[in-house]
Length: 341
Image (cartoon, rainbow, N blue to C red; front, side):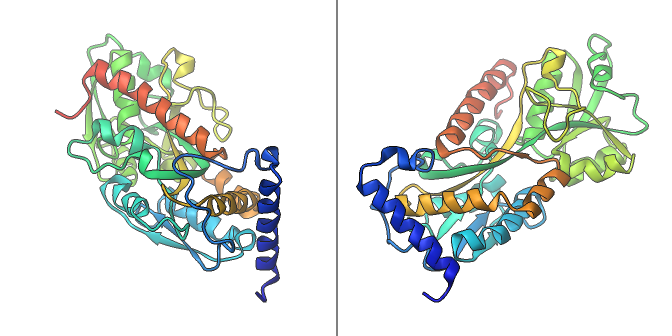
């Protein structure tokens, strides 16, 4: 191997295998993530060629932009290039299913959203689904909140103004990016819990839903912050509140629904996963490389500019969050009859 960076990566793999052979379980503490079968150990020189990262959405969205920013930062620690491939369709199910069905050698991995496993199976009528059990979770990376957004001329200046509609008899319309999405569920559950008469209006994605708020086609809407931030920064729209349990590090001045007495947390986490049979050495190599890549200044700058929070946890914690979110959402979906009709 002529590339000194690659030699360095391979040397570190050899040290890790030596440490494991000496029985030093603590040596790998926090590095080995089990969310499926461990595989057979794979090739000792992983990675020996470029790795494909399947983004299960069209180019230009949050998931795609995060992946492309990280894709550049990871090349040095990984010792190989990471090729970003977009596979849009079925609310991320198409691309994620491709990853689940891929050969378990670590050369095709994916970047799925948590909603595919927490909301889509419960809200999407006839939705294409992928089970988390079909994947091996490698590492968590980011989480985005859901914010309420209104037009600058709207009578809703704060989340308190919305809550004040309770018992008024007034009916409002709210825009969202489609049934089965976080923007739909967060608003629908919120208005139900608050006792507000509201009619949902679906649009073909977060961008069109925000545009509908801008055009006063609906009274209010919700989005991930990156989808509406430019219009908020320009003064055309305003954020009213956020559906998080605690104030977001990227939105410290924005009140939460929880502060107002509503136990409603809805967000979108994203993580790296591969086929269930992906070998341990590939998982370890990817974990190490991503942990280095997320330290890149350009990546940190990207997250801050787009109001995206870090969720850099191991695979077990990603899995626990998804299972916990599924159960919390299910309680509200069943309570209000929000499932497919």
